Amino acid sequence: MDRRRLLTLLGLLLGLVAFGTAGYRLTQGWNWLDCVFMTVMTLTTVGYGPPEPLNERGKLFSTALMLVGIGLMLYLLTLLAETVIRGLTDPVTAQRRKERRLIHLRHHTIVCGYGQVGEAVCSALLGARREVVVIDHRPEHLEWATARGLHTLVGDATDEDVLRRAGVERAESLVSVINSDPSNLYVVLSARGLNPGLRVIARASDEGAARKMRRAGADEVVNPYQLSGNRIAAMMLAPRLSRLLSGDVTSEHFTVREVSVPEAGVGRTVAELGRETGALVVAVWRAGQALRGRPEEVLQAGDTVLVAGAAAEIEAVEARRLT
Image 1 (cartoon, rainbow, N blue to C red):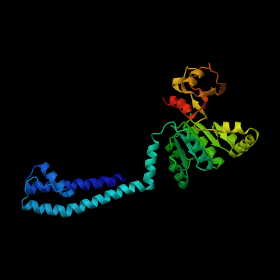
Image 2: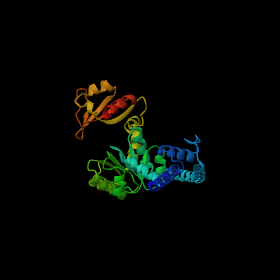
Image 3: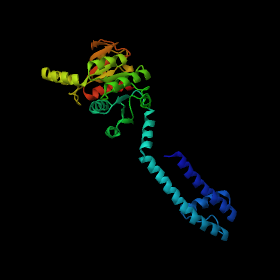
Image 4: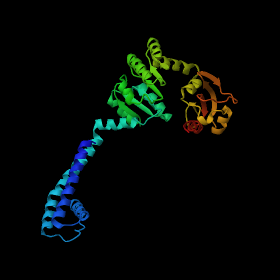
């Protein structure tokens, strides 16, 4: 809503009440509370009746106030309704409201580019109950993202100001899957400069571009074409294993997920975490090294575990991470 216009409307309304109050004070000689009461009652057409009988001057003033005041009140209410509706439907105002919500996000994931790959990434993140902010320069694509409950920001992800508005300095991770290697490279450079601790994953169309993105600071670089080819080959050679590793077997009965060790789990063994949640700890990552999830292994701060089990059991592990 336009604040200046709202203040103008409020000022006109208060001025009208002040005019009516002063008029009754002069014509009737009532105390100030009775004058305010009579003015508001006249303008709102409630009709409770005057505190005391009106004299001739009071009746003439009330008539003038009703003819002028009620018309002005209707006009003010119309302007107020128009201002509210405009604030709700104006695209610029709606975008400002969205960006104000982004200010409060912490430890979220930013996805740059909402094409087919970006949509698939967002679907997986939503399934894992992650907060996601999508950046794309095409408003029509972001309409689909908004309909799915994602935070959206219209803009060029290669612009550092756009990344700041998306909360890159407070984000946990960023995925750049724009259909352009130079754009993805620039996003990686900008994001790494704005948040050195950010986990960055980028898309590349060939190995040459992938090497540049790694040098620019990308933690992981994915070639969708090579990944698709490897997946097809794996489905031919080991179909059940490929489904397990890709997450296609995820259901309410069985799922596999990577989870940071909860604070409450530090100092406990793998066996204890399994008993308390029902999930199976398959592996432990520590300082970049993968360890077999042996029952006697003591979990440390910063560890990440690969857990398997029913959806409720995995959620129990993640709930501990949030406490």
